[in-house]
Image 1 (cartoon, rainbow, N blue to C red):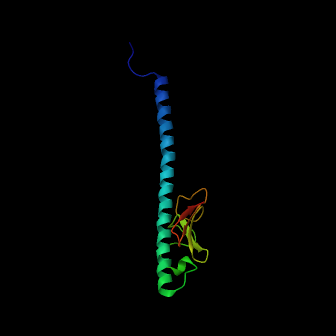
Image 2: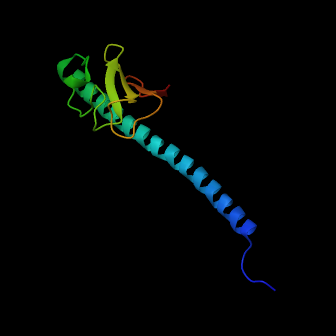
Image 3: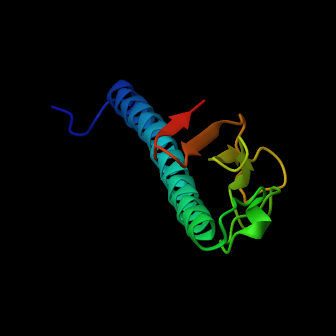
Length: 125
């Protein structure tokens, strides 16, 4: 009687392990990207708070992210995954995922997360 595993048994085991690793890596990439989107939602919330504070104290709305006291780049920067801007006359904050020029790793596809400052509703495209 021989002891040990046959070549075929070892090969099948390695293929199964490799398939599980590939599936796990794909799931991990999705989790990481959702985390980055969560960071963008947080920054958009900060922009909303800053815009509301500005509106209460000065009576007008900022038309640009640079006018608000929030660290949010309006161009893709090596420190952030998203670029941020205001639209709809300062009533909506938008975060656009960088595909070039942003923090590594870059996204292969750009997507947008927006926050309506009046209602607090998020929208993703």
